[in-house]
Amino acid sequence: MTALHTDLLVIGFGKGGKTLAAAMGRQGRKVIMVEQSDLMYGGTCINIGCVPTKALIHRASVRPPEADPRSWFADSVAWTGSLTSLLRKKNFDMLDSLDSVTVVTGTAAFIDEKRVEVTAGDDRLEITADTIVINTGAQPVVPDIPGLRDSAHLITGTELIGSSDLPRRVAVVGGGYQGIEFAAMLSHYGAEATVLERASRVLRREDEDVAEAAEKILRDQGVTFVTGADVTRVTDSGDTAVVHYEANGTAGSLEVDAVLAAAGRAPRTAELRLDAAGVRTTDTGAVEVDQYLRTSRPHIFAVGDVNGGPQFTYISLDDYRIVADQMAGEGKRSTADRVAVPYTLFMTPPLARVGMTETEARATGRPVRVAAKPIAAIAAMPRARILDDVRGLMKFVIDAETDAILGAALLSVDAQELVNTVALAMRSGVTASSLRDAIWTHPSSTEAFNEVLANVVR
Ligand SMILES: Cc1cc2nc3c(=O)[nH]c(=O)nc-3n(C[C@H](O)[C@H](O)[C@H](O)COP(=O)(O)OP(=O)(O)OC[C@H]3O[C@@H](n4cnc5c(N)ncnc54)[C@H](O)[C@@H]3O)c2cc1C
Ligand SMILES: NC(=O)c1ccc[n+]([C@@H]2O[C@H](COP(=O)([O-])OP(=O)(O)OC[C@H]3O[C@@H](n4cnc5c(N)ncnc54)[C@H](O)[C@@H]3O)[C@@H](O)[C@H]2O)c1
Image (cartoon, rainbow, N blue to C red):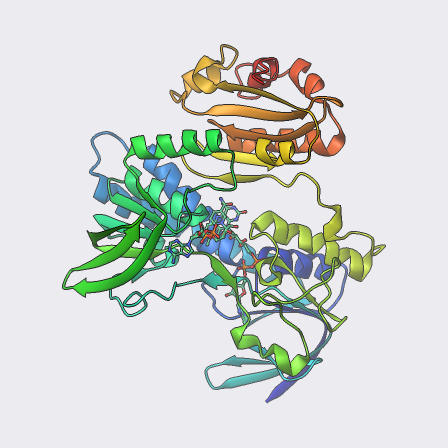
């Protein structure tokens, strides 16, 4: 077995790890990046996550009327494949072009707290490192439903976006981010999508008025929701599967071509042999870290989905900043600094959120003011009419005493961009009145803030 020593070993080509590898490599440190698959250079987001899903969602919205939806789906999958290949190559080159960085393709596992073994077929490589960063991401959870794991019709999101064959009828198990985005996307391509969600409603993190508005848009578009659903069994029957469930005391079943597992993603640690290194995990199977992302072994860090934090690419990127600050900065940055972290659910139009919901704000006991308006009623936002989509609403939750913005829910065209302005305002202490009275370009979606923030509804 060959043995190497390096300053920094990164396990997994995710967002935080690759950014750290490039930054430390540019500073002249010796870095080894280990990635288990050459189809995953660049990690989940660009290969099987954010980028391909949003590309397919976008392509669904630009289908020419004369194009057959199924052929358009196949074309879109091919187009998306070219895009991810391009990004994968750029990501590989970003590290490979640095003299001090080596990319090793193989699966990493700890031998002890300083030594890691990388395996690729019969090849073995032993690496020792001063600092080790675990960035192995997460993997889909397939719920333990009788018949599901053995069903020939079970698919994950990765399989769905890699196949040019659009399933005609799909049961989506789980109504979280993946469930809703995939169901919305599939229905845009003409498939029948039914979301089976265990909880009593979808989007349960959102205020009821916001969740209802979003759900109505999805239902109008053709997505079916079964909430309070206990999926009891999946049985294959030739070319189709039958999904049996109980919801609100009633038994039901669905015959479908595919059953999509969208019931969450669990930290990926199984292959790492963390025990050998003395790296502890939490009850949920994540690598246990402190606010500086150090594991129970101080020279080993964990960044991204594997450390059990919010599963977003930009959180993995911020994890990089914290570890880089530990390795080469003042060591002050921590997860505790994070304020007003926004997120976007990419339905059409998108639902973006930041800060507290109205329910959360009222639960604090402070006086709360709510400013809101349906998009169709906002005269100062012709942008939505130009894009021919006036669905949705905007809602701001404001501290009635201090005028501070406590949170916002934006269900509208461009919401994925708008929310970043609101988040920056919240972080910078910009008041609701300042956001309301600011000068914005025209025609833009941001100018809606002039009108919505002036419309106090309660
Ligand atoms: C369908 C889907 C859509 C999403 N959409 C969004 C979105 O719109 N916006 C957003 O912010 N987030 C989105 N996410 C979440 C986002 O993709 C993840 O939070 C993010 O990619 C996590 O990055 P990471 O740094 O944790 O590692 P990852 O990017 O997951 O990288 C981990 C890497 O480690 C490798 N690896 C694993 N084990 C080993 C091992 N033992 N040895 C060597 N290599 C190993 C894996 O092959 C992988 O390449 C989406 C996720 C999915 C699945
Ligand atoms: N736009 C984005 O930012 C985006 C998009 C996709 C994924 N992601 C990330 O990926 C992560 C994983 O997404 P996800 O949607 O798989 O997970 P999730 O945790 O968001 O949602 C999983 C849903 O499945 C339900 N569920 C679990 N078991 C079930 C069962 N047996 N039957 C019915 N319902 C069941 C849960 O109640 C939950 O609502 C998310 O947490 C998110 O951070 C982000």
